[in-house]
Every structure is written in C-alpha cells, then in structure tokens.
Amino acid sequence: MVPVVSYGLNGKKEDSAAKNGNLQPEQKLEAMPNFYPGLPETPLFGTDGIRGKAGEVLTANLALELGYWAGCVLKASTGDSGPFIIGQDSRNSSDMLATAITAGLTSAGLEVWQLGLCPTPCVAHLTRHSEAIGGIMISASHNPPEDNGIKFFSREGTKISTYQAEQIEKGLRGLAGTKYIGERWGRRYYRPQLVSLYQEALINGLSSESHLRGMKIVLDLAWGASAEIAPQIFQQLGAEIICLHARPDGDRINVQCGSTHLNKLQQAVIEYQAHMGFAFDGDADRVMAVDGTGQPVDGDYILYLWGQSLMREGKLPMNLLIATVMANLGFERAWSTAGGKFIRTAVGDQQVQAKMWETGAMLGGEQSGHVICHHYGVSGDGLQTALHIAGLVRNSGSSLESLVRNSFQRYPQILQNVRVVDPDKRAQWQKCEELQQVIAEAETTMAESGRILVRASGTEPLIRVMVESASADIANYWTTKLTEAVETYLVAR
Image (cartoon, rainbow, N blue to C red; front, side):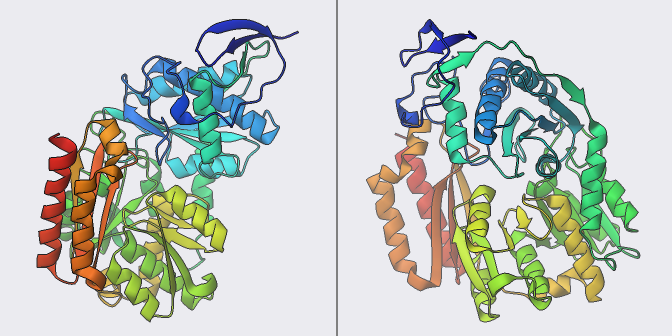
C-alpha cells in the first residue's frame, strides 16, 4: 500500500492508508485554514495566475508546493501523466522559482521540459501542440523587477480553469484530502531548442505576401522575454530594425520601458524616422504600437484595424469583436456604425478568451495590448499581434497613422490608480456605501454621454478608476472626485 500523508481541516498531519486522491470541491476558499505558512487569507490566484513580491509571497518553498499540487490537479483533470513545459522571463528570481516548481512537479512523478527564456505565448503554443498536460510561465508580465508570478496553462494552451486553480489552492491549504509520498520521480530536461517551433509557427501564420521589406521598425524589448526572439523574426521577414532595451536584464525588466512606458519608443521612432514601433511587456504576451509620428496606438486601435482586415476577408464570424469594460466608447460606437457587433467582458485575457469560445468570435482583446486571434493561436501574443499589424500596414500601401486616423475618434478617457494596501478593503470596496453613492451620482450625471469604471486590480494592490466622456472637462472632474472618494473611504480610514 502506498504511504500517504493526510491533512485534515485543522491542518494537523495524520498517517492514513491511501483511499483516493480526489480533491474536495465542496469546500470553499474563504473557509480555508492557513495551512501553508505565509499565505494570505484571500484567494491566492488572481486574474493572471499568482503574482507578488519574490521572496515574500513567492518563495521557493511555495513554488515547490505549487508544482506538486499543479501536477496532481492536471494529472487528475487529464487522466494522463505527460510532461509539463516551463518557460521564464529575465527576472533575477525566475531561475529560483523555475527550479523550485520543477522540483514540485518531479516529486509528483511528472517529466519537466524547461525552455529557459521565452515569451509566455511560446509556453502556451508548445503546451497545446505537444503531449504536455500543462504549462507554466514564470513571469510577472509588466510588473517591476522585484515582483514575479506563476501562470498555469492547460494542455489546450489556455489558462487553467477557475476550478483547477481552486483545487491547487486547496492542496496548498491542506484541504485536498491526501498527499502521496511518491515512489516514482519525474525527470527534468532542458529544451530551449523547442522555442524555434514557436518562432516557425509565428512566421507560418502570416500570409505569403506579409514580408516587411522596406520597413523600418523600432522594437522596445523591455529587457525581457522577447529580447532574443523578436529581432530574429522581424529581420527574417526583411524589416530594418532598431532595438531598445535589447537584452535580458533582470534588474531592469519593465523599468521605464516596454508597453507601459512608451516615451522612449516614441522618441526613437521620430529620431530614426521609422514607419512604426512596437513595445512589448516583460513576457511579451501583449504589445503597444507607436505610429510614424510618435503617437501611441493601443489595443483598441489594434483590434479595430485587425478586425476590419479580417472582416474584409470574410474571416470574422458575425463581424464580432470581444473587448473588455476598459475599451473606449468611441471604439465601440464606431465598430457598431461600421456594421460590427461588440461584446464587453470583465478585465482579463482569460475573460476575453472565455467569451470568444462561448460566442465563436475569432478576435478579441484588451486596450492594454493583450490580443487573441483564434485563427493563429489561443493566447494573447504580443509578437503575433505586432507581426500581423506590421504586415497589414505594409500591404495597405498606407501608413499606420493614416489607418488610425480613419478608424475612430477616441472619447477622452482618464485612468487613475489608487494604492490600497489593505487586502480586505481592496476586496470589499463595493460594500463601501459612501463610495457607491459617489459612483451613482457620476453615472446619473453623465448618463449616455460617458462611462465610469471602478475596479480592484487583479494583479496589483490598486483600485483603478476610469472615466470617459465626450467632454474632457467632465471626465477630469469625475476622475478627481472618484479618486478622492477612494482615498477618503478606503485608504484614510
């Protein structure tokens, strides 16, 4: 009989005989004891996996346990014991977390293929197109160098389900029934050569006329995961490229660069008289563009332009786009006027993905630059998006700035973040009656002429306030009032 260690609801360890390895779905996350030292009482998984400061929230011990329980849950879900694929960005803590989570997976009896440095969508693609039963990316995306994160993928190459995430977390918190002491250990293999298969898939997804010869393009690689692969692909397609922040650097990843800091890319596009520029975040699952005049081109414009192209080719079912609540109102109204259908979801590429599967939509994404096109993949992919937009511009015979100018007029949209450190206040902000009264007043006043969105970030300790209106003055007024209300009722108290 296989020996096991069993953890009851009180967190005490008991010897028992193996009966089954089933996890217990009826137990709620909010009722969990703090079995693993240092875990917050609130759910560990956010909108994009687990994220936090390396060495505090994300420790080697936690990563090891995560690897073990992820292996158990994915084995149970698939009925298979195939390998796991692990990739990472350039953060200094990524080696530590990748090594620890590998130890957890191999202790669950699973083989691990380590890719090393690569973009997040590379892990998603290779997981989907191999015998792997799961994938893991070690990255905190656009967060600063001291943070890190762990993203989990199913064998389909999509983010794991909420149910699977809850099952993993129950294991961490001692609610998973039995923990097996293995008699069969997995092996680790270092396979960076597999990244070339992802690179080939990106190029093969382009039309035969999508060369980039004659184009000058600036790439901001954010000292991150795209530093090696992105220049190779653009050069292979014939583009002349200028690279910024162009090597992996764990001390500087995302620092005043990349998709959340476009000023250096804007300056470089103008200085080098480039046709356009693209800025990736640390793990290259999203991208922001800059046109030849140095003006930013965000995910809303990218969706509109790519959607128009697919619509003309008859490749956009129902002329449907999926966007989030953050999408600009001008974008939505212009797309509807052009004969398109527009559906909004909650923030998060996982929410966009779910709605795309539900509706049969082929294109969706976020204003922040996460774009998913089911014609070519099942995950947000900054490199894929940049290549298709560059090819679209090249084949149009026009410029990116001209295409944007003829697409839609943005409503003035103002975004403000308020840091709310207390996790309970952040999680329960909707129960603050005083704040809700200010929100209701703003919504009533603006009516159909604008929109308000207040939400808790799923990846950072922030309450985000967004106001858009046909009038910039009105947008400014209500942004200030709402931000002050959040600070008064959630921070000062």
